[in-house]
Amino acid sequence: MNKNGLILVVSGPAGSGKGTVNRILRDTGDYVYSVSRTTRAPRPGETDGNDYLFVTREQFFEYLEQGDFLEYNEYCGNFYGTPLSTSEQIIAQGKNIILEIDVNGARQVKEKKPDAVLIMLLPPHFSDQEQRLRGRATETEEKILSRLEQTHEELHHLDMYDYIVINRDGETQQAAEDIMAIVRAEKLAQKRNPDMEAKYFEN
Amino acid sequence: MNKNGLILVVSGPAGSGKGTVNRILRDTGDYVYSVSRTTRAPRPGETDGNDYLFVTREQFFEYLEQGDFLEYNEYCGNFYGTPLSTSEQIIAQGKNIILEIDVNGARQVKEKKPDAVLIMLLPPHFSDQEQRLRGRATETEEKILSRLEQTHEELHHLDMYDYIVINRDGETQQAAEDIMAIVRAEKLAQKRNPDMEAKYFEN
Image (tube, rainbow over all chains, first blue to last red; front, side, top):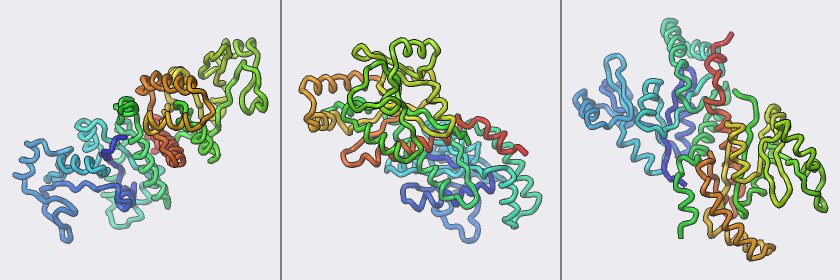
């Protein structure tokens, strides 16, 4: 069977719990979290190579010219992007790489790597999402409303995704296992193993 | 999410171990084995409704006229077919139905039910298959060669299948769990849950 890892895009609105789910996956040892390049300055406690690869704008655009981004975007005047070369190295080692990116990033990945697997992680319902966001109690009302509005916008693009995983309260482990099942199944997909007939009969 | 069960086709050459794998699936309680209608006479020990639904040729052709076959074929002068109505009832109850049929049957199912999941179960290699068949010691050399020849023919149609599962010696449980992962993943497929956006926001 195909020995390569998969490129996994895990998108999800604020409150979907994607950070926790991805941490469970990473702890299995089979999943590597993609570290993005950014032109943003490090915040207190952030370390280079761990949270981000901190680069200058000049370096960022050099990588861009070299075609070394799987996806990138601009947010609040700073650039963020997923290194293509690193991603390819990781999957060649048989590890799956997780990209925790939004709908726009997901679309870029799908264009560049059609065999990437796009997963949307969702709370069971919009009302649960709202409740989780308010439960955090760290965000302003304005911020909460803006995030909920963004979810409306993002879910219009749900049909771009291959899978939808629901993260129910107290069942985060189940959601992570859903993703593990998706990865196990995808690796068995006939389209990912086009040379099986020849291999079966080879001497 | 979609509460329906799936129609699973599990094909595999002689020696693939599909009987054992399917028994493991059935023992979980989530999978129902499809019982075929046949015009063949019962063999000693076979019971109606358990091994087969034994019908007359007239009855068989009546079902055929009513369109009540998911697939059917003729073998050694007898007809065999999978009841459509029963299959639909089973998946409506949320159980998955397993059809243990060959490439020709699989093609008919895919035409009639494009959302059926087609799985090819294989020994690791042709040489393993040969060894398993010879190990049975119950079959004539002629029969063994005919089965191996048939495998050559059948595997030309491998690209019709959605998944390829390898049944390694002593790892039948793993092969069954591969199929369980496929089913878990397929149920999360976006294309099987086209109304998720609306459901997410509904009051």
